[in-house]
Image (tube, rainbow, N blue to C red; front, top):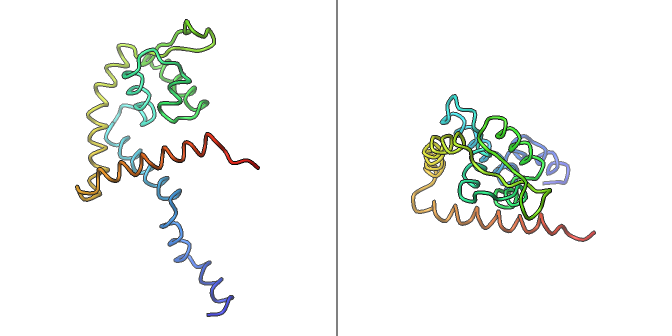
Length: 165
């Protein structure tokens, strides 16, 4: 096959589709979209998002942590997390106060409504997790979770330590 034929073949919709089907960034994004869609359908009329659920769960396990610590534990970027916390404060799911250690930082806690929302969302999130994992044979599920964790840890280190230019 000559170079023109190869270039034309590489530009075909089938070739680009195959490239996307082998692209980790694309597949992770698509999987995340599908998981978020399933979460929203399962949640029904409650407008809790997967990220808000992650914040509720993390705060419930770490009462009084700062928003900076919440960024570290959830992996949600600082500006997005600030917006999420602001919306959750407005909904009455979270409360915050200045920390004693650093008057510039806020300690975040669940309100009674936050605890109620978490108790409602928890079984739904577990069902969603089960639904997602059911796409894989049972013998592969634990390995899949381990591999995802490995990817997240490794990419988090790369993100935190950008290469020198």
